[in-house]
Image 1 (cartoon, rainbow, N blue to C red):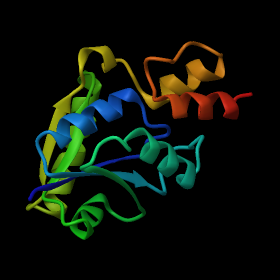
Image 2 (cartoon, one colour):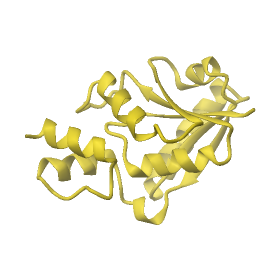
Image 3 (tube, one colour):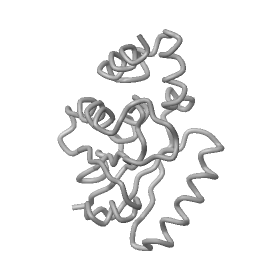
Image 4 (cartoon, rainbow, N blue to C red):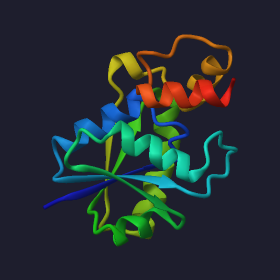
Length: 158
């Protein structure tokens, strides 16, 4: 059985994230969405909120789970007994930063394979930052995030 981790901040989780996780779940036996507890960027949702939003969003997937972590991603992957790290690529700029992270993660754990999924066309522009900005300005985000996330965003910004 191959376990994959899909790490990130997920502030909040979007339909683009879920698309990558679901596509991963068709390939790997188990996918663990790892939500990083200590991001360097400012977050809108605290760790418990991000965990709850993600867990609700993927509850229909039998082989996807959500776990927090606060150490190196490669250490989290080892703890989860994962052999693969999943990453998503949206635009050209993503490739450069993902490549750098992949090289460092490979140096830290050469046995951990990095697998990058290209974002589906409808999600190539999508980021949590854009979602938060549109929600803050009361824009329509209905097709971009799960319903539980829509409600949580509008509540934060009301």
